[in-house]
Every structure is written in C-alpha cells, then in structure tokens.
Length: 595
Image (tube, rainbow, N blue to C red):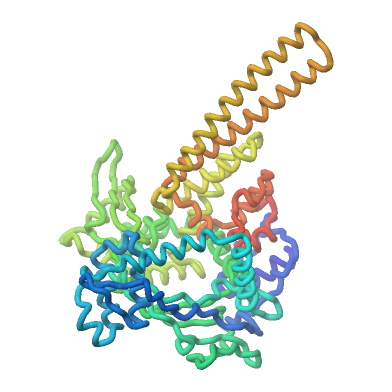
C-alpha cells in the first residue's frame, strides 16, 4: 500500500470504518503515485491549520438607465427612483423568457417590487398589466449585441481585467498551498427562478451587503478588508468547516457559501471518501439486501415499509426524498411518495406484479416507469395503500432520517444516497466491461463509454429537454455525411481509373498512384465512420443528461482506469472542469482499478 493510499485511508477512517475482513482486503488497483494529495489529515474534524484569503468579490453597484430609456405606466412616461428602476430592469431583461408569462412569476415579482417602491410610486403603479418595459428590454438587448460585437482588442482587455480579479480573489492559501476558490463572486441581485414550477419564482433576490457576510479564516492571518464604508457581519476562525465566506439568501433563508474549487485537496479528499464508502458497500450489500427482504414479512408495519422503501432505493436508484418546506415545488422521492404516485397492476404487458410510478422528482423532472417487482413487495404496497386517500403518504411510518439512521447501523457512513452512487458506479463498470472490445477504434470506444454512461443516466432518471440547437446541429452533421459520401464515391472512381491505368501500363509511378488513391479512400471512409458515430451518439443523447451522473455519482477512478487500459485520451471523456474536479483520481488510479 503506497504512502498516498495510507494518507487517504487516515482521512477516511473518520467517516468509514469497514469491518476487519474488509480492512485487510488489499486491492492491487489501489496502487498509486505520490503527490501533493498525500499529506494526511486529522480525524478529529479539523480540516485545516491555516487559511487566508481576500474575501468575496461583490457585484458592481447599479448603473442608472440613460434618460432616453423610458418606463411607461398606463401609456404615460413615469420616472422611477433608482431602487425601483433597478428591480424593473430585472424583469425587463427577462421579457423574452417563458418565466415572465407565468402567473406565479408575475404575481411574486409585482408584490416584491411594490414593497421596494416609494409611497408615491405605489400610489401610481397598481397593476403589472399596465406597465410597459419595452424600451428597457430593447436597451439591454442592444447592450448584449454591443458586447457580442466588441473588437478583438476590447475582448482581450476585458479578459485581462477578469484575470486580474481572479488573481486577486480567486485563490487562497490553505496550509501553505495556493488553492483555487470555486465561485468567489457574490451573486448579484435579480429575480428568483427556482427549479420546476417553484411557488417562489419571480421573487426579488436582494443585493447582498458585506454586513450580511461571515468571513472564515485562521487566527493570526490577515483578515480580508470589507469594501470602503462597510464592515463584515462576523469574522470567525472555524477549522472544522471548509467554506471561506457565508451569508443567508432572502428567498428561502438558506445559507450560501464561498467554497474551495472542486480541484482543491480538501474537495478531492471528500470525493474520495464518498466513493470509497460506496465501494465498501459492495462488500456488505448482500447482507443488507437479505435484511430488507426479511423485513417484507415483519410483524411491524414500520419494518415492512422500511424494507420496501430500501428495495426501491436499491433497485430503482430512487432518491430518498427529504422532507421539504411547504413553499417549495411539489417534488418527491421514495419516502415522500403519495398513494396517487403509484398504480398497481397484477398483470401488465405480459408481466406480473407491476408497479407503475408517475411523479415529479428533483428539479421537477417527471419519473415515469412500469416495473415488475417481487410478489411480496406488490402485496405490501397493496397493504400500505388500504384505507388511504390519493394524497396520503404511501410510507406513513418512516422518513429519510429514520431510514439513514437504520442504514448507518448496518454499515458506518451508509445512507440512502450511497446506494445511488453504488448502483450508478456498478452499472458503469459492468457496462464498460461488456461493451468495450480491444479491436475498437477510439471513436467506437467513446461511443461505448457514452452508452454505458447513458445506462446510468436512465437508471438515475437524468433527463433534459432537447437542446435548442439540436435540429440545426443534426442537419449540419447530415450535410457533412452527405458530402463525405460524395467524396468517397469520387475517390472510388479515381481509384478504379488508377488501377485500370496501372494494369494497362504498369510502372512505379502508376503503382504509387494506386497506393495514394487507396490511402485517400481509406482516410475518407474512416472520416465517414467517425461522423456517423457522432450522429448516433448525438441522437441517443438527445434527451439524456450524461453530465450529472458523471460529476456526482460515478466513481471517476472507473473512467480513468478505463481510459488508461484502452488507450483513450482522458480529454475525450472529461472536459477541463471535470479533469480539475477529479485530479485526485487521475493522479492516483492505475489501469487495473475495478470498482
């Protein structure tokens, strides 16, 4: 076992304590190289010893509209105060967006806007339908066009200004290492959109001031200075957390953080811990499955519900479904399923004991699935639904907290979410083993990888709307394929002519010409195959989001090992952001790694 592996093992010991049998199983795929990652960390909750940074970067103050850009109310020009005008611009910028057509968005915006108006403004502006933002909207459309049409020199100057800001605010010093910060900018004010049909869409996200922000740094370090005329809400020195600055947003009262970049050492350690926990589950999952299957016949209803819920979380990769506030979108997970979300079919489409799921999951993405289940699961579901109304909870005796507490007793660090990571990573590993053949070209291997990733995305219900540019990009690909086929036909004719000429009058020159034409034809055929593979891949990914599982649920060591083993450049699978996030895996993984 390498020094790197021992260092990460010390980090993991605070979170995951596998049994003795697991601990002694050394995997040869864990052999790694030494690097900056190998400095061990304390297991007492301390994340760092020294932390110094320059604080967050605030958005610029509001720049008033020119006098010739006019807001109208009931057909009359009306001059807004600066505070009201700024909020009006938030709405004006979104006029061509679907959000501004939604009644909830309009209502929330107008209520919050009126709260920020002066008394005189409120006396006049009483209906959103009488407001005319068209000149404001046109002004910002023109500004966007001007930015698009900047000269090369202007763009370069802007790029250099941004680079200076990144250099000043985008890095910190943590335990002597210069680490990149994730998002060092405080979010500007605007209108809340939310995910799905969120009941708070359109509400005003207020400007965050230094007085709202808590700074976290080490004792004795240089405390970052607030903007002139302001002061921080609080300065603390908490080395058990990894955030640098924090505040509470006004829409839902949730804390927001400025954190280290995903490529940082602490983030890498946290990722490694997460995937090692999922990997350790592989050694315990059979006994856990036997336990939840025995729960199906328990005398206690709570145990039965726990067993069926775990079955769904394990087999269908359903999210656990955390308790939510009443003013959030009506999305559910396994534990928060209601009776109305499932339909039982003793027989359907030639299969027995089928459960039909239909509900809105995370981000209001519809989950619709018809799944054959074990007979005992089917009968338990029927029991759970007895004497209940459609809007009653299906699992009324359990919740996510109870489920996770029970799982943690089976294996330290185990939660319902770990099952999702475990099943996603296991599916990727299995699919790659099945689909990858040694005689494939690099392009064919990439298609095989994306198909394996797609199987995971389907399992986890990672959907997306078809991109707006999809049809156009497919049309361009079709045109390229058509053109390539024409080039191949021409190349075939030229090769045939060259061969005929060589047969009639053989010479070194004619022989070389045949070889040259054959080479051209082969290259064109390879290019055609590559284009056709791209088109197949694009079509298959039309409504499937591959990035979510790749970033959050798939052990990156599977991908890195696969790339190394099959000679596929990592850049073909991971973009720069992903390579930065998974630098630890790229650095430590051999081609023999198996999840």
